[in-house]
Length: 482
Image (cartoon, one colour):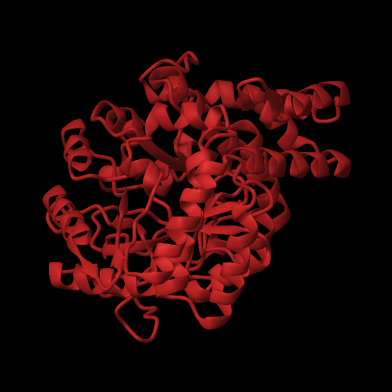
């Protein structure tokens, strides 16, 4: 029997089934233990120190107790603390991005994904480099600066050389005032050598969803193909970090397995990265299984309600206070709006989950990986965020200034990251307003910028930001950053 060890590099030791089961038993036994719950909530709350605001976070057991508790007053306190933490470290900023699907060729047999090898109902497609350029230009014309590229696992059609060529193409496209400044990568688990190649290509975050941490379920859900290897997949983040990638992004697909099990496993994975590499996940994504071609989500009997989904997100924020939490267009406007107040710090906008979808006037549905619930334009999403007092940010400065990995986390953990991220958000929003926004969005946006500039505590920083925003308005100069 494997022994739980967060510092181990073996999947079944740092994601240990017996430890998860013991955690769930402990959480169930203590879900009404108000003395314990109060102490956990107090531990989670952000605290001001001489060095800045700090937050200790929670262990997977402590967070699991909160998740198990059904007391309405406790849930409201969880929500309130989640919002306090998010505002303390990220302010009201919401980072914007879009996925870019390169290829839906895949050799795996994942039963929840329409790209699975046996699905004959979808046309297979792989973008040429000219088509990649067209997609990038379409995204730039919306105003996007940050992409997450996606591709199925297929050594013949989607080798690492193809991915690297696509990254080079994306970075090379400069259209009008548009440029993609950060490319995050969501591709299958690979080797240390290939991660080094991705690092050298200038990627931002390497993202890989675990799908499920329950090994028995994992093997059933991935019956064929290289993804069937649970250990190789689960240990991918360690190889990525060994390959020099500073920022990695975790995630599970909620609905495949019991959510309390997944929640504990997800936090154990975050604790493992912190224990081994000295830095936890840069991002955590919280997707739920959705309808897609050849996929019926009702076939999976572990679906979760909107209320439970909100509670999971808030508890993640309490447990891992410094990570970016991502919510995609899988979710509706209403769900996304609620979760933005519970710790989410990154969202996608105007996403198309089909290969080549952005360059099509009408949204294609025959090659979508999943149904997109929020189908608003990027301009509409940006305006909606501002109307709800969220500051849309297209900033990519930390990645390009070398503030990644432990350097980013050390700034974030002392609350100092806001001194550069906040003015950068205002300047990149100004770029969006000048180059891409509707008149209504532009009016709302500049009113917000004027209000938010007053919140910058350092007069020198505020003056530089004001001057840069004026230059953005009066000229084609772009890409100012702290």
